[in-house]
Length: 265
Image (cartoon, rainbow, N blue to C red; front, side, top):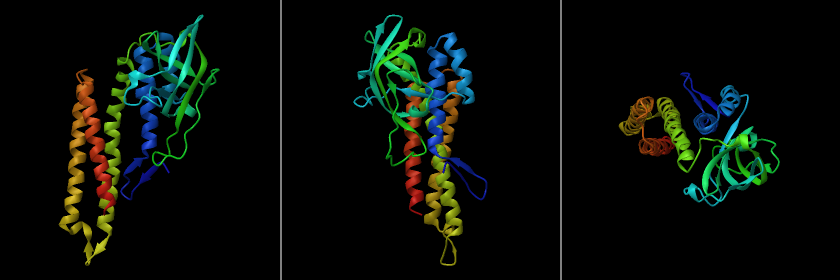
């Protein structure tokens, strides 16, 4: 269900697997590494890196998707810890996660909290009936007087900038991941066009088919070069969130067009 290999040995994984890996690294390990205490990093990062522990990222809410700053999830000080109330929606890995990186307003400022599985007042029911990405676990996170100890606050987090920094990491990965889906579509279309015979020759020999294949390969190559350059900028700490968002937008758009073109073969 999650992997496809053609006769040439080209391997493509279901995007649900990419989503799992993206959340685990960019949206869970990154905020712990960037905003966490030394104790949090020492405990969680090795376990998350090996897959011993699974994480999820709770930012989006039922009424606040494109406007995360409008979130209504709140944390209130309660003795030596916090009481967390609210809900998050469309959360990858939520039901199976051992820890959730949850963003909530504390005294009017957005802060990050580590909410561990089994915490009283915390539930993560799985969402069913999806039309796509069905290999990916998608959940709702519910907090009802959820008790969070002081040591589970990400001490270096503060403001909307913190979760948006995490999203930039994930968007870079999505820019690459969309190309993977496009490459699988291109390869499937190419193999089909070489094996499908019409008028005593493969349809790949007709220019109208060749034009479609060349379009797909051209956009894939452009997208790869875009991500390669963006990666070089990231290595130099010069990549901006605008550049990352534009790369994701471009590559996802063309991956969708390539999928549609392949479906018309």
